[in-house]
Amino acid sequence: MRDLGTVVRGIRTPIIKENDDLESIVVNSVLEAQKNNGFEFHDRDVIAITEAVVGISEGNYVTVDQVTQDIKNKFNNPQELGIVFPILSRNRFSIILKAIARSTKKLYVLLSFPSDEVGNGILDEERLDNSEYNLGSIITEDEYMKTFGDWLHPFTGINMIKFYKELIEKEGCEAVFVLSNKATDILKYTNNVLSCDIHTRMKTKKLLVDNGAKVYGLYEIMNEPIDGSGYNEKYGMLGSNKSTEERLKLFPRTGQQLVEGIQRRLKEATGKTIEVMVYGDGAFKDPVGHIWELADPVVSPAYTSGLEGTPNEIKLKFVSDNKYPDLKGDELKKAIQDEIRKKDKDLKGQMITQGTTPRRLTDLIGSLCDLTSGSGDKGTPVVFIQGYFDNLADE
Image 1 (cartoon, one colour):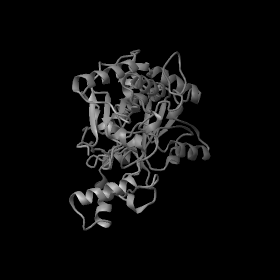
Image 2 (cartoon, helix red, strand yellow; image 1 turned 45 degrees about the horizontal axis):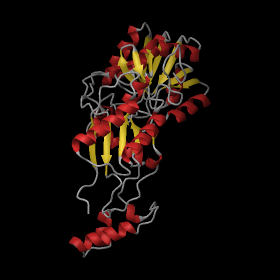
Image 3 (tube, rainbow, N blue to C red; image 1 turned 90 degrees about the vertical axis):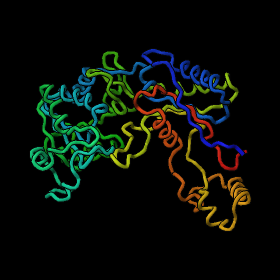
Image 4 (cartoon, rainbow, N blue to C red; image 1 turned 30 degrees about the horizontal axis):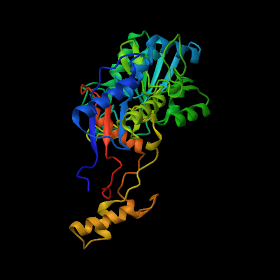
């Protein structure tokens, strides 16, 4: 029996810049790592590339002024504009907010509370519980500042309402903040609405449209080029992040072509069918900071066909405790191996799977990769995974 299960390696590459041949860089980096470290390739190994370097190599960038122009075009040069449910992020949203503020004269900002949709807090929840407000309240900016305005995020040390207000006003735009968990409350202030939520975007837009608003979602901003800019026809500004104070990198567009090209070239080089995916944020939640690490619209925007689907696994502890309580050692191992070998091809709904993780393979592997590569200075934008699809019955 194999001594190792899943093995994950971060692969160092050259620093990726615009117009680099990313397909060749990934293939050459993985082959060089194999040569220098002595591992062997197998069918169903996985290579994953962070979406950041895919977008960079594509040159898929937009400027603040290009985003501003698209917003003006969509809303016909609005004098006032409302935004609903933006996330609280200097990297993810502040530069978008700059463009929005630059497009209008007065901006109404409706924020969810006690946190945004990915878990970034905006107030002291214990103080909320002891206040006159509840999750169904509308809290004005003055009321917020009086009751919660001294709150700072425990990790960043920043109050994002103050940060966002200063950013908006620097653009010569008047800013009005209101806290509410009901999207239609923005219509008390304006009918021109930019819906900024990520995972509930379709529901929010429909709700606002049904109530008479003129609405675009962030996924509809920069969904086509402006003056030769980058764009993303499917996700627009979703998945973008800060490049400079006047420039954003968009979610990548050519990922599917990339993963299929890498798979083909590695098949030629190794004789093995290696699965390949592009990954962004992993879909996991920090139990201390309560941040759900998924500000991208999806974990994986592109992947080869072998990564489709969900795990089909039995729960070893359940089988051991319930079917073989009196077995131990090699006898127990053999019995469980037999259970694995004879398991149904689709175990969905069966008790024998309880406690396994009912998530898509690309979401699970993307989380593993995001934790491996990190978002800082590790220098490993490529992750090589072996044994992910192995089980205890594999020899």
